[in-house]
Image 1 (cartoon, helix red, strand yellow):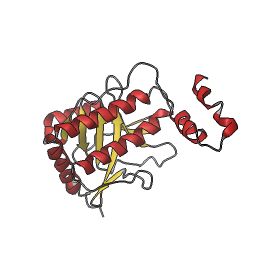
Image 2 (image 1 turned 135 degrees about the horizontal axis):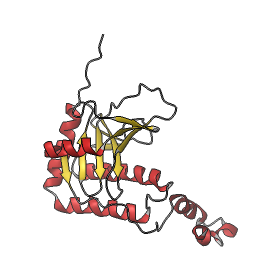
Image 3 (image 1 turned 30 degrees about the horizontal axis):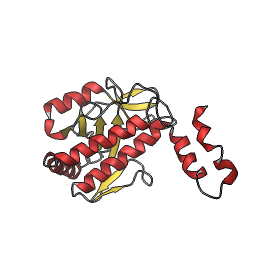
Length: 213
């Protein structure tokens, strides 16, 4: 017996509400863009370890933007698998692509996973030079491809969808990852905060040169 198709309408409705609120709030849109710009500039994803930090921070920026737009968004990526944000019980996966010249979006890491893994999540894409868009596996059926250890959504699939369905795209000048060297490395920033605490008297003397390598 075939499983019933997932109902993504509540997720679509929540995203469309988010889009309408942003359309009416230019200052909020500007803050979202500038927050992402600060993130990818200070923690360039050209350094591999920063990619996880940037991915998590983008989830928090989008969740915060949703709350600022009046949606009861809760950040859940640290607690749930597949749902980075929940709005009234509706889960969203958040995926960002900040490279110059967009490519495929990695939806699921399939390393060590069953080969039958499929895309099942309502997904918000944060795309450099394009904006913030919504996709799901019913709107884009049979669009994913397997590449190395990822299940990916190709650039042609999501850009084509947004051209045909612009209502699912919040067009914003999302910044790309700068080509210059990162000003910060995520692990160093965390260690710096820890070592700056008053009781680490000996370690504190040497912490400022950590990133010099």
